[in-house]
Image (cartoon, rainbow, N blue to C red; front, side):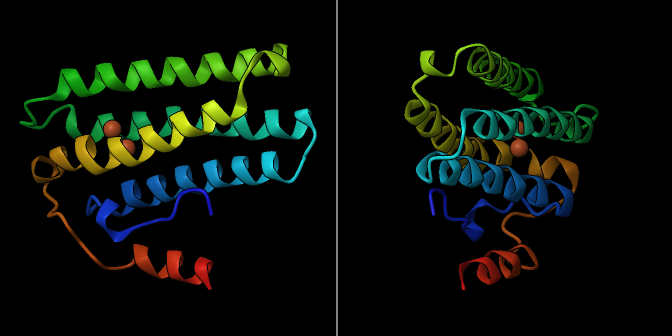
Length: 148
Ligand SMILES: [Fe+2]
Ligand SMILES: [Fe+2]
């Protein structure tokens, strides 16, 4: 497994925690496709899927904290825009010319972003949307099922 889910990633909001697991699952699927020699078309589909999910997730997340007292709202949104632009560029570039992209570097970037952003930035807004970190319920069940 490329990225292992960890309960330490929990934000405490069911939808957001589900989204984060999905983002990790899609990235793991991408890794697995690359590792198992899937076609460039199949790899491209997973990158597009990730791109769509990233944008939907950011919208959901921002709608939760935008009207709250969370002091880093603008900074957080700025980070989202940067990530979203990078993922969109990767997706477009890969579609255009898969050989122009180092897919292993892309995977490292995704792993780094997912684990760091969820671990640090996303947990900062939790108290402002009325949830408590960490919540160690629910989300771990799915991860354990997958691991077995
Ligand atoms: Fe975020
Ligand atoms: Fe997030």
